[in-house]
Amino acid sequence: MEKENQFSYLPDERPPFGKLILFAFQQILVMFPATVLVAILTGFDIAVTIFASGFATLCFILITGKKIPLFYGSSFSYLAAITALVTSNELAEFSAVDKIRIAQFGIVMSGLISIAVGLIIKRFGKKIINKILPETITGPIALVIGLSLAGTALNNCSGANDAALASGPLANWSWIIALVTLVATVIFSVYLKGTLSQLPIFFGVIVGYIFAAVVSVATDVKIIDFAAIAQNEIIALPNFTLPLPNWAAVFAIMPIAIATIPESTAHLYQLDIYVNDLANKKGSNKKYSISDKLGLNLIGDGIGDIASGMIGGPAGTNYGENISTMALTRNFSVPVLIVAAIITMVISFSGTLSAAVNSIPRCVIGGMGVYLFGVIAAQGIAIMIEKKVDMFDSRNLAVIATILIIGLGGSYINGGMLPIFGIEIPAIATAAIFGILLNLLLSIGRETSKDDMSESATETVEE
Image (cartoon, rainbow, N blue to C red):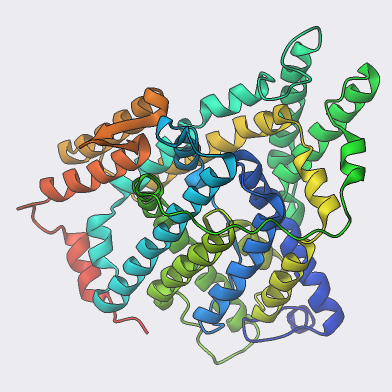
């Protein structure tokens, strides 16, 4: 056991240089597929997204005093809101670049939500947040986010977004390529073990890409344009852009930060268990009070969103993939994450890499999306199961039911935008706001449960 512990690292420990670089690349590898995929699905610049991931991670680590070993990556929670915003009639007159800049403004503003919640937790403790954002809200919101993207996934599978596959004798190949990608992703997800189990999406996309390339060569149809990839410069400056203020973006994207809070919280508690277990096994007398830094963690998340949004990157969150990798390798070294963030920023200047990623056919993305978006929805159910939500309680049912119908129903009318007091707000944001207000209204006069009283009695002032 002592020999094994020589190759494990706590947050404040640094591996030798060679291992430091190797471990850093491993963290980049598990972060890369999902982070880049968000950029592809939302239309954000791939190179900027990669740079923003590293830059936001550095900001997070510095803001949290190098106490919390987490890596920042693009969040899927914002996909539906951003898609609804950039395709809305309200932004029809704007160019594609300006639509992204407007979305950036919403992302920057969403960072303020995380910061505000973090400050509230630092001041009053997490109990007040549990009252405002219980699992009867966060669970259904996650469920709506995943299911509202079902149309996007199948639309990509159909080849509607691939000019080479949109019509003609090759139209059915789009569905075949999507199916191959989907089956491969599911098989990898179920059967891969160890570190490789963290990369089912990455391997699934690779299989789909190779199959699409074979079809492209065999049919002489440019499903993948390899010549276009080769024409890109090896080194190229990412297309950084500044946010463009717009109230529509505020109402569309800002409330989605609510959905990322329970995910970020769960990751922090998970990390606390892993790190302190390793500290005990290494015989360290130091206590790593990571779970007590929930407020600081959310502030760091907010700063990360602001940093990413200010330069043209999508909204993000701390990545469970990286946490799982750290747990499997018993390597929670913050210096490793700092080096990984710096290398990520350097990689973003590769024009060839950005072009290769951008060449992934939409049908491949669609096949993978069928699985991925379904998983996002399933996580919403998991939240409610884990927290043992009473589905026979009329208050709970009222909140859950209204969020589901407003969020899902609204996603398929008027481009996913609902008219509220003269302005249009995405259905998911509307559902979240309505759910919060309804929950607060129905909580008036409700007696504090024994669980709440017990939590209040045992809750300690953090940091």
